[in-house]
Amino acid sequence: MNPAANSDLNHGIRANFAQFAHQVIQVFFVGLTLGMMRTVVPALSETEFGVPRGSFLLLTSFVVAFGVVKGSLNFVAGRLSERLGRKKVLFWGWLSAVPIPLMIYFAPSWGWIVAATVLLGVNQGFTWSMTQTSKLDLARGDQRGFAIGVNEFSGYVGVAIAGIVTAYLADHFGARTGLLWFGLAAIGAAGLATLLWVEETLPWARLEAKLHATSTGPGFANRARYPNNVSAKPTTWEMFTLMSWRDKRMAAFCQAGLVEKFVDAWMWVIYPVWLFQRGVPLPQIGWLVGAYGITWGVSQFFTGRLSDRIGRLRPIVWGMWLCGAGVAIMPLLDSTLGLALAGALSGFGMALLYPNISAAVADIAHPDWRGSAIGIYRFWRDFGYAVGALLLGVAAAVTGALEVTFWLVGGAMGVSGLAVRLLAEETLPRLNPAYPPRDFPASA
Image (cartoon, rainbow, N blue to C red):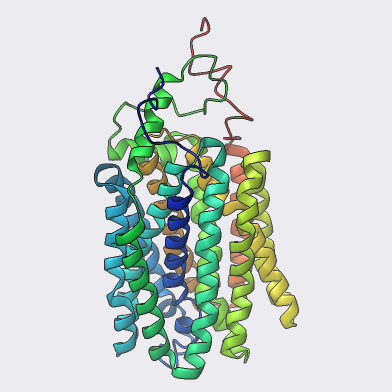
């Protein structure tokens, strides 16, 4: 008997379009909240917030703090959402963000910026995780790439728009005043929308688990290749070890997620400073950084859907290589147009890899523990902010040259993409199903 027969719930984006749209709006606000810290704060770290010129480790400290906190809270959010629900965790994320613009406005020193970034990590860990997980709850299995692509499209368009808008606001009203009013407006609107319009999506995940339990045997040919060595109710430690090293596919995706954040950490903290030191005006810095972010955001609208057709593995590997190449060639370019095109190349590479690693993890994560799997993947991925920022800060401090960080990031992306190619496999069930299975007996 179909478990959905007596239920009003149905999977699919069209069937849940209104709620899916609310989640798209939510992640746009999440992107705005992150983006307001991306251009103005690092570019004006010396003149506005007292960071001594050349203090690369101090400069990167706020991104290190962000990565540690956001990575940890992704992990926590995934586990909490399976017990308490997605909406409650989402709202907690917005509550944690309320002090951020106030702390920036009143900041007497860089330490306050680091503290505000810790709260930003809490906000992003709770809110971005929940918007992604909720969309996966609502979507069908053959829509996961598209669902995550739309999620990341909306979020990173928000990041790019906020970086550009806050650059103009800072130029006209001052950094502190511009960030104060922009931040309060974005966070307040998002929290209110959560209370009024967002619904709990955990029932859709539970329905999928019931449907999966009755859809066994060779007749269900497109069943995913879930890991075999997982208990019925896995503990937190069991899930962590599975994702981190026991399943080589999951481990490959987690390391790729960690390394690709080197690019984002570099684009956040090094690139604006490098441009500012070359005399590029703040609004133009916003547009050059935005060329990466906008290309990344808009392209994900298509690259997620592409992976639903051709599979996850090829877009991930080629995305890693293209993204790294875009960063590596930037020191060789002199023109604004060349830098913008290189940023767009990196953004397109990121669009190929970013939603599709998450989709690959979701493909082979059982619906009963998918929230935890995504949370642990996102832990490793966003911990890459901390690892990447620390490595970038050390490399810049030791060499005294920001240019070395370009090649460090490009090389790391190349090696990581090769690791995915060698260790992972195609996860899209239609292209690599469990039947002929490891999961079914030979006589089935």
